[in-house]
Amino acid sequence: MEHKAFVLSAHLDDAVLSASARLMRPGTTLVTVFTGMPPDGIPPTYWDRLTRAESPRQRQLDRLAEDDEARGVLGCDTVRLDELEEQYRSGPVDAERLSARIGEVFEHADEVWIPAGIGGHTDHLAARDAALTAVRALPERPEVHLYADIPYALWHGWPCWVTGAEPDPYLDVDAWLDGELSYRGLDPDRMVREVNALPPQARALKEKAVAAYRSQLPALSLDGSNPLRLRNALSHEVSWLLRP
Image (cartoon, rainbow, N blue to C red; front, top):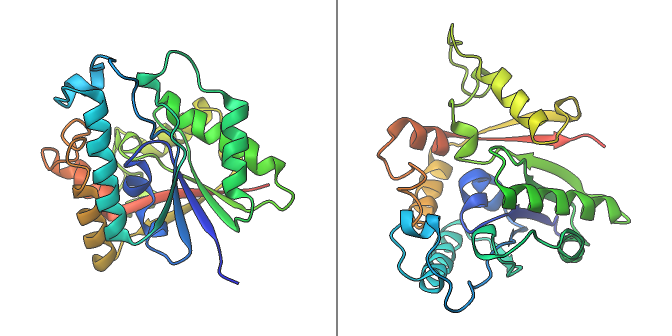
């Protein structure tokens, strides 16, 4: 029987940016939560205006097409839950309903990958918490990995234990990252570090897949305008195996 893995993505682009190496492996399905179509007549939001979108609905169609292109590069299946993201909804997501929906998808999973919530985006935290609740309710618990949310995890670059670089005498990125995990409601003592240094072929595939999200990359400083950030995003991916 094929090993089944599911990578949960809050938005269109998150999982490809943060867990592409897992998406490239056979038996992996990308599950994107907030892919719903904005309501008719809603004006452009702050993020829409920042990315020069004139119509939220047209921009969402553009992003869905970008995601299809990226998935085609990586070769993974997809499930879209069609929830409205924060910028288009009038209140918080229904956590109980979302958890139930995710649980249906994860029902036969051997392995699940979930955003850690680094950076504190409301949608990332909602997706993470709903997924963890869903996993706890499953009769057979899958292996759980929490992945570092790119680009938020790259605010200070990768820690030395990721890159092998010499420590900066005036910047402790490891301390910042552990503090960020704790601040976002996780227990670093229950998390086992995992580092994936992408080999050249995987890095090239990821670069091609990431480039598909052309409407979002400039606002995320991943369009090449910040070469160090882009290099960090393409060279390594970080996750943590969650202990029971």
